[in-house]
Image (cartoon, rainbow, N blue to C red; front, side, top):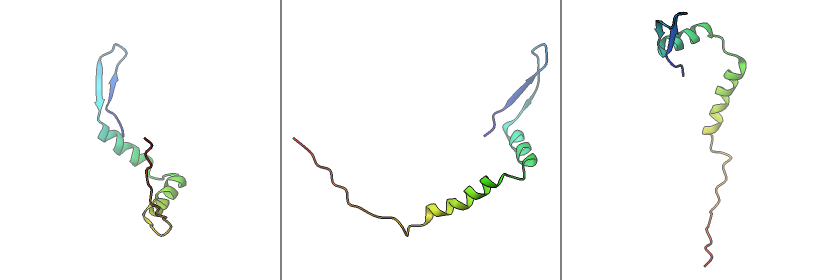
Length: 65
């Protein structure tokens, strides 16, 4: 997530405002080649959907008076 950026000159006058959408587009245009660890983590996210190795246990709550 990118936040709007305000650019001021040396006298403190507002020169321009760069929107978060523009910053996001610029980031992804410049960084189109992501490091390998980003790619690996996206592949491993499929493991969250597999239900084959889940163990179900019944849990009970004991109350003391």
